[in-house]
Length: 51
Image (cartoon, rainbow, N blue to C red; front, side, top):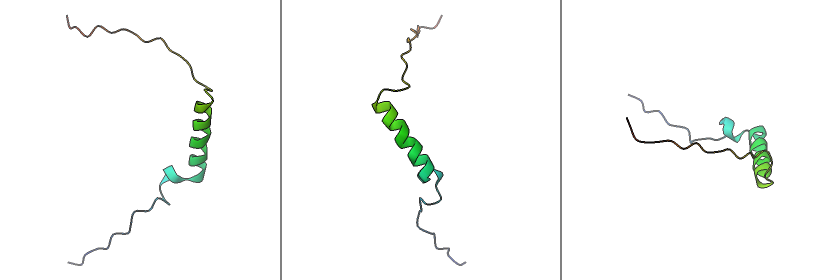
């Protein structure tokens, strides 16, 4: 049986590292730092006791 050589892991094909995706992540990080598009929500109280 012939052994296969595995190629080293490459991030070039990973969509996470796509330049457009990275630009979107950077934009969202800047918006979060500037506190844009952030909304406060009331938290609901939940009773953890079973009946």
